[in-house]
Amino acid sequence: MMGQNSYHELKAWLDQRKVNLVAVSKTQSIESILNLYQLGQRIFGENRVQELLEKQPQLPSDIQWHLIGHLQSNKVKQAVPIVAMIHSVDSIKLLSLLEKEAAKANRILPVLLQVKISPEATKYGFDEQTIIDELKSSQVTSLSHIQYRGLMGMASFVDDETIIRQEFSTLKAIFEKLKAEVFNHATDFDQISMGMSGDYQIAVEEGSTMVRIGSLIFGERK
Ligand SMILES: *Cc1c(COP(=O)(O)O)cnc(C)c1O
Image (tube, rainbow, N blue to C red; front, side, top):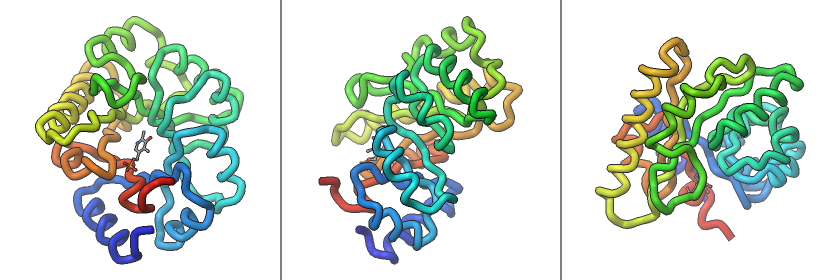
């Protein structure tokens, strides 16, 4: 794992810019997660519901678990009661399912809408061209147990910085457009989750408010 000093340096760099840190703990051991918890980290990100369900009961209850990976319909029921936020909401159908389960769990669920800004980083996400129309033409923006907090996106895994920068800047532009045209009454639609170990500095320059960093903190995944 990253030494204590470098974690604090990263955290200070992000704090200075008012950017939230999601420590991506997928594949990491309970012990590694606890080490980081002891340095003060409280937000952790997992990409698989099954792994989250195994880890969550073994770790302190004030950890805020963010689900960052694709959520399958058949996992919604188990995920909803234990997650603090879902970054990977990628369809209208999923929103309807989440509303139903959040109502049953008697909670308001904070979500980010995932937008596909890269032709290759992931196959999931709303289409950047049609997300506004899709949201407007469905009834989902008024769901009473869903709290729309913002957007999430992943840039292409390429070395060319201009491509990465372009994709992040596209996400920021879609965010502004949605904020003006769809979520203009939601004062808490204020998060842009973008940036990982390899590209978080570019993401922050392009307006990220939340980075998802794994290997830089924990070391390479096995
Ligand atoms: C694994 C993962 C990350 C973190 O990746 P690193 O390169 O290890 O920082 C961020 N976001 C998502 C969606 C991931 O699956």
